[in-house]
Each structure stands twice: as structure tokens, then as C-alpha cells.
Amino acid sequence: MFNIVSMYINKLTKDDVNNFALKKGANLSNEELDFTYLFIKKNWKDVLKNPSIFDIDRYKGHYSNENFLKIKQVFNEYLQKFGSNFK
Image 1 (cartoon, rainbow, N blue to C red):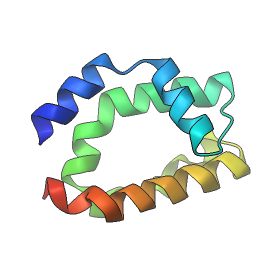
Image 2 (cartoon, rainbow, N blue to C red):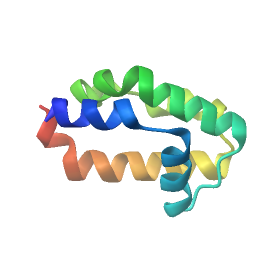
Image 3 (cartoon, helix red, strand yellow):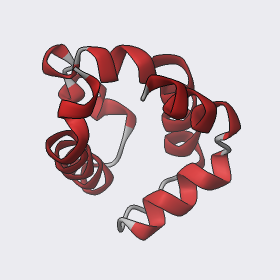
Image 4 (cartoon, rainbow, N blue to C red):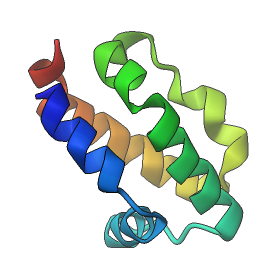
């Protein structure tokens, strides 16, 4: 499963991240988009391998309150839905 995700992440663009955010109701600023894109590219494997120790609240300062709540909600939703596939 990690190989599939790795191939997807390698092809991931800022536009992909922005379009997903918009689809989920978050209109990211340029700074929020840059942070999110770079964070995903650098940290996706660690987050998937250890979701229980990942503290999303630590990154609250990188987003507006409204966007952070949406991002946290989507993260938790996808963790519940797919988290067991990466253990």
C-alpha cells in the first residue's frame, strides 16, 4: 500500500492539494497551500506509519481558524476510514 501512496505523492502538485482543499470546503491562502504541500511531501510516510502519535494541533498556527478546523476534520475522517490499511 505504501508503494501506491508513494507513487501518488511523487506526482502530487500544489494544484492537486488546492483542488482537494476546495472540494472539502477550505480556501487555502498561498502560505497555507505552500505549507500544506511541503508538509505532505516531506512527512506523509511518518504520518501514515504513526498516526496515533501525530499531533495535528501542533500545526494550528499555520492556518486560519476556519481552515484548520476543516483540515483537522478531514484528517480525522480519512484516518478513521483508511488508517487501518497502513498498520
